Image (cartoon, rainbow, N blue to C red; front, side, top):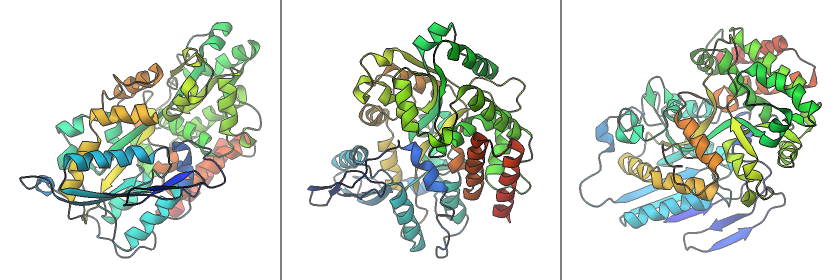
Length: 475
């Protein structure tokens, strides 16, 4: 086995682990300041496509497959596998390296090389590998526009024979599985899972005499009551741009049918005409004007997290990977985890979308369509996504697994188990807008949300800019 963890360019303490097994720690200046999903905006909003400028790809259809492609020869498993991930953070990479070690112990005839890079380093690496037609057997992908590049270019194997109406496919959350489908085929294996909900301070709600909002109007109306009770209603800071985009990820499909949203995000000509987009932006502005702090574009998410933990703010739209910081082991005051709960964004009356949709997405692994070891790669991914390994993922990293039931007996805070149950009962997840939409379109939404918060743009002006960006990308 060889596993290599590279320096994450965002600045973290990362061990360099070589094939000989020793680790050399190199520390860079600035600590990692954002959670895993928080970095997604930087990943896709880079302005250029990951595969742009690559040499001639295999071509559409190169990833088509049959069940026979995944049949292992009889006898002990043998061969070599190469894997590249974006889990270069020293806190995260050991989990994935341990999976490799366990797989090799169970299969002594298999030799696995895994390379873990940080977000930007991974993006750079996969571009180079694709250009040289040297993608590994298994490689990481975010769902949405990022994954579409590999699918459309023919680099991603169609995994439908393995995951459609099979025991393995049925072991995953159905909502997670929908995010890895395109044109009726399945191209990715969900590895981790993240969802975004409102967390709330139970003491603040009790003092204000409030219950969990039953409608979106209830949520907005509760803000004036919470202010009178002495609380900042909503913790929100948009200094990095992604918090606004992630709330729009939730609001848009509640106003616009998901089928329309996906078509528009993927560059359908003449898109973004549904009036629900403007309505979603109006609702976003309403929440921020009535419930948030002024000058949110200058406030960091770290600041509002601290305000929520300190009991100053009553509600906070945040993701499941952040739940750990609301526990004592994550740095919160003792017994703080007993003082907060969560709820999904409430239904919006008379809106034209899906009111049960949940913002969030899995991280995924794809199998290279040119791999000579597809069967072994699939076997490794099956091993990685057992319920036992899903439980370890939650206990060791605080990340939910897309494997149904993996949180049931996990040693974690009850809110994580409760959210896992919510996701299991959710039919559709809305993939983060900044990875689901084409890059320039996503950038237009990001800039537009900042303009709404600053008061320099109206919802209509934002959508005019989005349509212009989408039109250029579809030409």
